[in-house]
Image 1 (tube, rainbow, N blue to C red):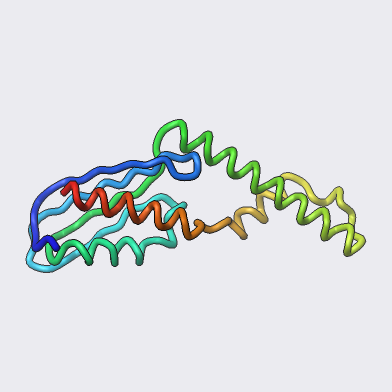
Image 2 (image 1 turned 60 degrees about the horizontal axis):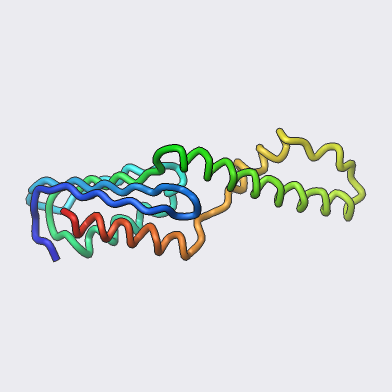
Length: 141
């Protein structure tokens, strides 16, 4: 476990067709202060990120940046969203037949609104892979 130090670590990995980048910068301080800046895709991981950092560093100001980068971000996110929207459309069409509703009401704006309200969460394996990227960036400090 690192007591305190000034340093910078950066790691990246392709996870689910997207380039995930983790940058960690630390500066000596008396107490541990962890700042997490993450893309919206990683919103639910802030507690886990803080816990992982606290396991490796005892004190200092630590800034963790976790984000998606480059063309893989846009292409991968689009493919994932398209797949998710198609699944959502099949689900709602099935429900509309079962409830005897008009399937014509299942439009792209409707699906986009449902996607925003019910965004898919990260799978456990993705969380483990992201945690591994964070740990490797910590070892680079």
